[in-house]
Amino acid sequence: MDPVFCILALVTAASAIAAVSLRRLVHCALCLVVTFVGLAALYLQLNAQFVGFAQILVYVGAVAILIVFAILLTRGSDSPPQSIFSSSWVVGVGVAVLAFGALAFSVWTSSVIYRPAPPAPQPTVRELGEQLMTQYVLPLEVIGLLLTAALIGAVIIAMREGPARHKSESIAHRPLPIPHPK
Amino acid sequence: MPETLDQIFVLLKHWIVAHFPAALQPLVSALLSISAIILAFALLFAIATILERKGLGRIQNRYGPNRVGPYGFFQPVADGLKMLIKEDIVPGGADRVVHFLAPIALVVPVLLAFSVLPYGRNMAPIDLDAGIVFFFAVGAGTELAVFMAGWSSRNKYSLLGAMRAIGQMISYEIPLILSSITVIMLTGSLRPVDIVEAQAGYWGGLPAWHVFTPWGLAGFVLFLIAATAESNRAPFDLPEGESEIIAGYFIEYSGFKFALFFMGEYFGMFAISGLAITLFLGGWHAPLSFFEGAMPSYVWFFAKLFGILALFIWLRGTLPRLRMDQLMNFAWKFMLPMALINIGAAGLWRFLPNGATRWLVCSLLVFGPFVALGRGLAAKRHWKPRTYRFAE
Image 1 (tube, chains in turn purple, brown):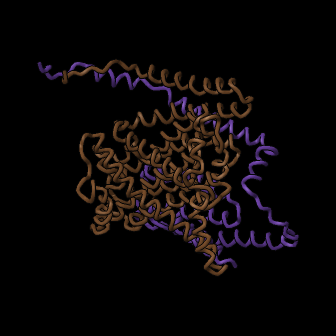
Image 2 (cartoon, rainbow over the protein chains, first blue to last red; image 1 turned 180 degrees about the vertical axis):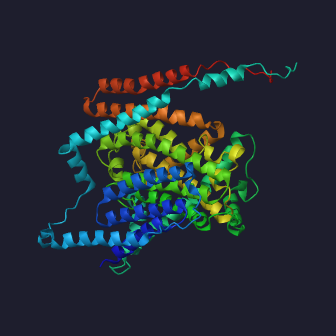
């Protein structure tokens, strides 16, 4: 097997395990970020440049920050006093083994693995862009319109300023109780 | 001879790489590019710190550093030595692993961002098809590094600074990307080398840079404002506001880790200025047609970089720091609508026939909303002439 793939897979899997087994939530979030980066590196190794960079831009740049904010703004940042492992872990392992067995069985018995592998496409960013601009232009436009509308809507909600501002201004203009120095 | 001088670094690299066996050549080539980037930008960092301190001193009517070497120009050497031999203090309550990793996580993405910029003719270290996306993707990593630093220090000021920094960086990342989309729309490429190529040539006396079009000018100004905010520089230096939260997210860092933060901030500024040059200021092209070929292409790139640095120093010396609400209002109520309108203007520019109408329509579309939005926002504030109650 390719050594680069082995290293990347090992890092991704180890950080994913760490993300569910560490005690502190912030550590878990940071390990999850390592997992995201590992996945992006796997995409890059498969020559999917755009998907890899988009993975970093969206997951590391936005989703991870959202998770971190959510942790800090709730009281989840303290580590729990009791063990984080559920007492019914035996049942959990049983369910996991069953699910894995079912998936493995269906993969092994399916006819897909006997089909010859299609030639691997080389999706360059240019081709991706051309496909998006010709064949898939309508879905792209619809998504773009939806996201822009959401963005503008959020700004319009923020534009409306409540009466709190004017209240604070009126407090500021109230004459001060201390005597005016002459 | 000018041709050789222009390509001297490329030729030198090919000459060195040719001495190695074929199996090692890609590795040696990569290592040479990496060392060139690190050396050039470390030197630029030293020069920028001394220029900034001298320039700020000039603006604030004082001398600035003038003790080490002639006119104090060896001050960065002294500072560097001091940073190296200072004690590295880690707070007792700090999260040691995250505290150690944060400066590294800040500097490494910024160094990665340097790798896609074209510094001269044939001088892009990695010629990526999706170079611009790569640049923004690695830039997104720095926000997390700032959070790591602020959270792991176990200090309320550093956490406040980190929260401010993340809020600011996320808010200004949107106008930053939206304003650079115009260039990508008009050139039809995400590859930095193609974008620079598209700005070759001259219209009469003016170079065909994107900044000399209505949408390009608006995009450049928006980009530069957002870039100032992204690199946490004055007037957007709230994350480290000395008078409120002392130094923000790197308050608990000393010695070389502090130097890494300082370096990361300057490197971020260089990288984003380099992207501004690539997108709007014609990359390594000369500003006037009779200069073309007179000087090597990389000289022009770094001359433009110094020009933008001078602008940043000037802004830092003359503008007061924004308040948090002003910062957010400016990003979401002014920068974002302007960036969206600018995208519309760029689209019109693409489809209107070349001529005076195109200039008129696009200029109106950009500068009309600029005036209207600015006036509208100012009118909502009910600003009156300032009155002083105690200082008369």
